[in-house]
Length: 224
Image 1 (cartoon, rainbow, N blue to C red):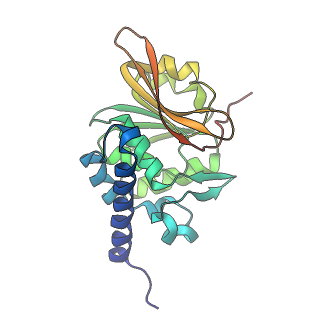
Image 2 (image 1 turned 135 degrees about the vertical axis):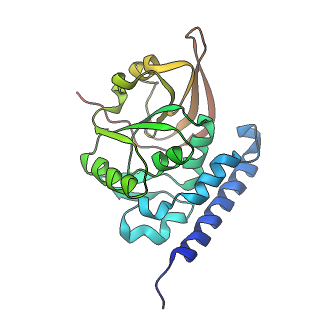
Image 3 (image 1 turned 180 degrees about the vertical axis):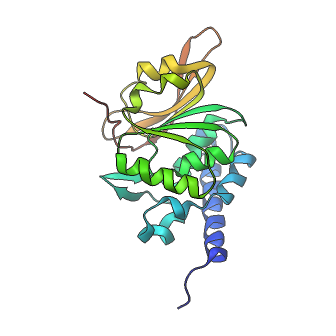
């Protein structure tokens, strides 16, 4: 059997995006829309997700399922990853804080959308792997190892904050670092099931939370 080439991977990526389209249509009542943002859809078609998973799982990268990436962590299924980015409502030039880099796929998509991304990862090996992968694809993203619940105050305020692990409530440091008019996407709830939620901050600093869909994420790790 011949090895899988870029043309084959592009077909798999297109199929992945079509499945994302299907999920958006099926969940339209909960989401309040029936299709992914066109700019995000184009970015999903461009970014090679197979480069942001362990090498041995490259072919499985475009299946609509979470995949293990080590250290008892996973990369979310493409629909959930895309939904989180869609809920962020990114615009070119937005300053974005990502809490939980993983191996860098969502950071790469946000960069492809023209956002300036700062990402915090608690697992040093993930941070280093993400740096290499993102740099190889030409994405200029700052990554540091640390407790993401504390944010990155040196670069605050942020127009958008993406949290890729679950918490019982939005960390206070992240709420403080969210710019007026900004929004944070975060899974909120207990250890078993959470609600993917959008936290918005008004121009006068008031916070509100909208629950979107039930999800399952690992818990946000914080420093003692």
